Image (cartoon, rainbow, N blue to C red; front, side, top):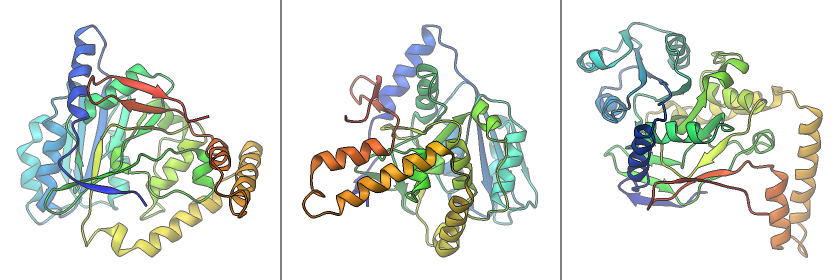
Length: 315
């Protein structure tokens, strides 16, 4: 389990915000970012969510907010920001995943992501995302350092930033890729079918990640992008067992290529060796397991200079 530390958001986004502006001033074009927020009766946090996006001042933003017909004042909050949104409505829908899918259909931006109505982007997140995709053309999707909010807005940041790979997902270690911290290129979205599988009520994001992993590795960055708000009435908490059942079904149904099967066998062998009393504690075994996962490099943010650097996994 990750170590959590409480406090205000670390200052990694602010230097990168300046770094990104400097890049733009030197002639680098901003990519258009398409962001969707689905909402239903989340008035307590909706204003914070919207402002966490709009107040960043990102110059090329397509922000779509689709409310499912709230009766708690959410419509009025969204309407106040209508002139800064690409599109919004407040109409009954078939759930948050259907709303997100509809929102993406209304956008054309080359970078995509979605943010639930409880959650927030960190300061400078959109500039950070733009800088990553502009500076590293090999990155097709990326997820940020895990972070959380409590009901009061206090931020908790993971003490480590996990790496991800297709083999890690297929081996069942899928908890958790933070959806609000994950962004991707539209070209990847289209190659993966340009859809969310709305048969899944709770884990359609995981199904999308697994589909993405067929086509491109998931890069991680040490920068803070989005924060997930921890609330007692969230679907992911109330229906945790159902979520895990959906997740297991998704992984069981995922086709394994010949390379996938070979990689999973290799990983399983090293995990078995790790259990041997005479070898399990060896740093060589731990390193071998890390290599067996086939992690891509990590995009690290220097908090002093705001520069982005690609770091390979330890040999």
